[in-house]
Length: 543
RNA sequence: GACCGGUUCGUCUAGGGGUUAGGACACCGCCCUUUCACGGCGGCAACACGGGUUCAAAUCCCGUACCGGUUACCA
Image (cartoon, rainbow, N blue to C red; front, side, top):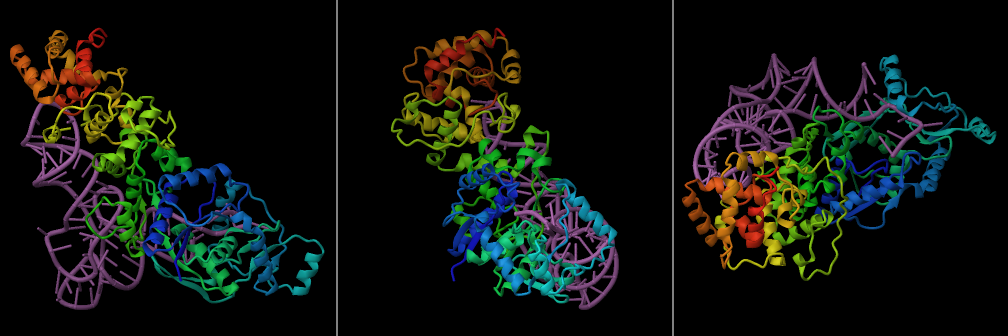
């Protein structure tokens, strides 16, 4: 029998980080065993489900590249079958009509009400005290024929227990006494979650149900339905939950955008990096390794490697440097600087396009349009303009390893790729290419005040020296690192100052920031013309 | 309250009878260096608590504490 698993989100919001991880694990499991990964939208709660959130979830999955097999199933399409199933159980005497009038608690008070009632009952609640549980079939039929409204509840046996072997948590048992006669069909004929899930999982021939641990008690209820239906339940695997830093629930209401998948997409994260990060939240291959390609994840994934304890998604609210988990940021940076350049370039291109910094010369054989779902103006996250990392951005040992032949023509495709390769070394997100990296692609870039103070204002001589250096550049025939170095060194000696003073001053003037690659590489990359222009510029000095 | 689950550095985790309890992120220091990173080296830092079982317990058992999940005619 081929393995068939499904990811079954309810479309009541965007793709939550926890759901995304569930989807990932489910996907990895399917691919690992060569099974099918199916998608089902659990939109039985018509009041709360929206098309927009369905789209958002699909977008999120697409971004993470978790492609599903077969058609997406919409649970609401199967409502008729769910109803029929409930009626069948009623007929067989495995369920009963509950004529208790429906009480309508205001949504928000539901939880509180539950706790209140439980307290009041001191925990000793008889789950089998429904007055309609044992009325005669005749009476039940008569009332129904009379037009009395009723819900259909599963008739859970007085004694016994449900049990199943969870692939993660092991043997799970629960006394019937602790499970209520759950409602299968609402009095308005609307099928409820547990019924719908079981029916659909059977219909879709699901072999493994992988979902959050918050469903553990639902699973017992579902096992009851499977039993009533005479169907062997699938294998269950419950996943530990992802918690907020205070170990509480990670929710949109409380934590906002950090929990949404689209936030990461829009903040310049690479799907591969975020997926990698997510995979390690609650799962481990049992080895000392952090970076895994999708192929490796699929290869190594197993249900045995899933933990039983919840994981904290670590971030600090109101701290722009720690807005999301450090490790996620680190991982993204690691991907950016180590992935094959050719794989990174399309992402940078897309980012520059959004920032209106892209020029077609950067890609002479440009034909295929790149889909880039980012939207502009998602600030707040990513690296903000003024250089969030101010004093910490990045380079080194790096330029020494570069073999510089003849420099590519400024603005050409090779130039673009070289430049991306040069600056990616110290970037954290794709956004950095258009923010911190702006000066490489535009004449219109900002100057970091702290950099000006530190590297220019402290050395007033630079105001005349730097334009002077520009003049030394003018006659140069070839503008490559060795030659530039010779000129700058000679100039430095002549002025009797340190190389660092000139280099750092030039860096600030040429790139607007105090951090960046080797200055020789910057000069060469920017090219003679632009270097001279920027060295001579007095705008900063006149501020 | 009841039922169920969990508890190894700040965080993610390895380890499941004998380990100097390992790695990663973060943080700190040193090296590299024209800046900042990267990289290298080093440091800080953990088995929730109490009882057992055992020659030996972070690992097995019991209890306690704490945390979480669930307890809807929501999903």
